[in-house]
Image (cartoon, rainbow, N blue to C red; front, side, top):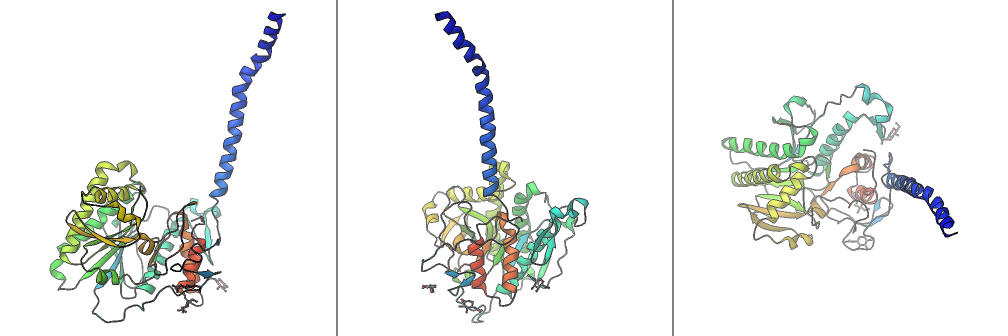
Length: 389
Ligand SMILES: *[C@@H]1O[C@H](CO)[C@@H](O)[C@H](O)[C@H]1NC(C)=O
Ligand SMILES: *[C@@H]1O[C@H](CO)[C@@H](O)[C@H](O)[C@H]1NC(C)=O
Ligand SMILES: *[C@@H]1O[C@H](CO)[C@@H](O)[C@H](O)[C@H]1NC(C)=O
């Protein structure tokens, strides 16, 4: 009896022993397919504008919106009141064209076309469209400035726009080396300026290096007057792992400003090459930038927690730290805390999957009535949506 029931148990158990792992893997498969579906849902990328709530509602110093109508005026100063003779400002960006010919077979497939407004863009045309809108915003917000595009001599880039210069710099512009090359190009560019020093004839030309997926929505000239002592300026945010964003670096166009900025960037490049090469594709430059700043003995990183500009002396350079909230504004990804948009925001960064929004914003701005404040409501309400390009 005992033996029999023992056998019976064993007989019943045996298939189970085999079944359990099998069930488990089916269960796991099922689970992971659910997760995948959910992830896909969360990361669904839209091919049209999607507006959410406007964060920062009721906060007195944040933009208030009714639909896409701004209830506040966002920009108080009229550009260029001509009180002082202004120095020239150039916005400088690194731009690489990849071998996706606009007419390649791959590109002609309609699935690769995205439509914004009345225009369809192939993959190859999208980055040109971003560059174009980048220039448009600068020409509206800083009409006296000019744009310099640093690029691979091999790309034969031509941009037929007024006040825009293409500046070829030899280098390795492949996608996975682009962030590294970008610093190298900045350094080479600054070096070139120093060598031409004798041709300046006392004229000062300041430089602001930015990503090309930004919209400059206010005059940036005042930073050079309001903070007369910095050599270079960086943007920071309250983020422990990535406190500095490399998408905005301003350099005072004096001999000493350019020299100090160049030496500082050389230090960043060295740290990048020696410590962060594994991250070279995306974040290496930001990690290296943060390392150079934070490893400075006197540096107090608590200052990153308050969105207020401050200065510090790092590697012989006077560095101005500007809050991302104003000079590199981007809504946080995912479910991060989000307190809306400051009224005096100057640069909006269309990071990641927000490139469509950059084009949509320009279309919105340029259609009918050109109101920056209203356009910023559109950006505020839509900035957390992920788009198809
Ligand atoms: C912005 O507009 C709201 C709504 O009209 C108003 O309550 C708030 O005081 C305004 N903020 C500023 C700084 O003017
Ligand atoms: C834009 O809209 C805001 C808010 O309605 C208004 O205060 C401002 O005067 C408008 N600006 C222009 C240039 O029309
Ligand atoms: C698209 O084309 C239509 C018809 O030509 C025009 O009314 C509309 O303003 C255009 N929209 C944009 C965003 O250019």
